[in-house]
Image: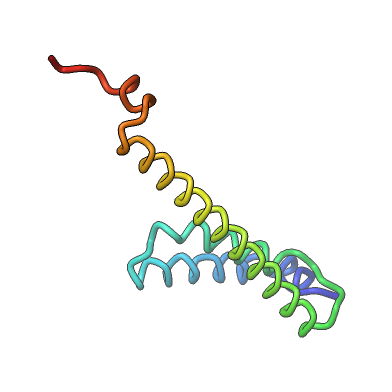
Amino acid sequence: MGCAACWHQQGWLYALSVALTIFACWAIDISNAGRLAAVAVSIIVLIPRNEPIWQVALFRFLEVSWGIAVALAIVFLAEWMERRVNKRDCSGSRRSRIIEPRLN
């Protein structure tokens, strides 16, 4: 049985954990991340798992690592595409002449 059974019976403990998470974010001066951290705590704590705790931790680590890798790949791809567009625009291509108005 997962952690959810413990938290459902004691809602004040769950509320305290969310409040402490938001306070910790505020204390280290990243208060904008408090809402996201509260959601993360809710997901981690309230979803029941029947697997052994080491397996839950391993799968959660792998899921987060995969998410980070995909996000980095998208950022690098977007940066690469932006550099190509900017390089083409700076080289005097026809596209840059159409977009920019003439000031004569």
